Length: 223
Image 1 (tube, rainbow, N blue to C red):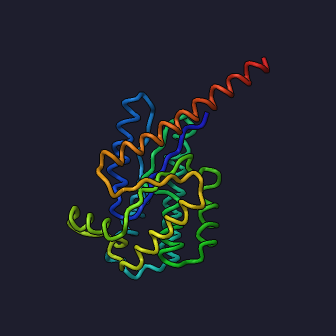
Image 2 (spheres, rainbow, N blue to C red):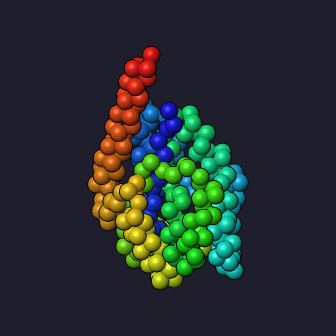
Image 3 (spheres, one colour):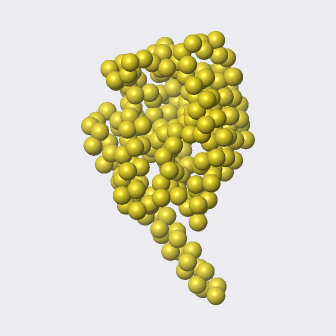
């Protein structure tokens, strides 16, 4: 059976990477085979694309160039990491995925959202996440965290506050439209956020176990 695909989304500074690492460790300790990855990146080619996308010196990058580079990184990510791991029955946790492209390029850059969606449909096909956790954090709070914890800001983090607000509203809109997206307030302690994420994960794992039992039952009836 195909593995479980979990993505963690949210505005810059919402704590996605920290929570992703904690979830990865938690699931490993429970005995699951888990892959922790990120976007853009996750592969050698993807990481090279990431360095181009986030380099502050590349401030002349066109918005269409940006969306296509993200899609290219995602295509390689799916080919090398996500699809093979899911076919092996593993749990894949990705720090960002397709929802980030819609939020950042579709809403933040005000590109034609239908175009952004169509580009990513070509890349993603039927490999949408089983569960997406949206870490909901006000823009100013997230950017303050970044300034406090990082020595420098990448190309997107350096964008104007209006851009980040549009991205944030994009995530909020997606969370309303997509049932797979579950919202958790990220304006809380790290432990409280983690506990809420684990509750959602356990529900997802329980559903998958029920599906497996049901399939085995159906197979047994057919023999």
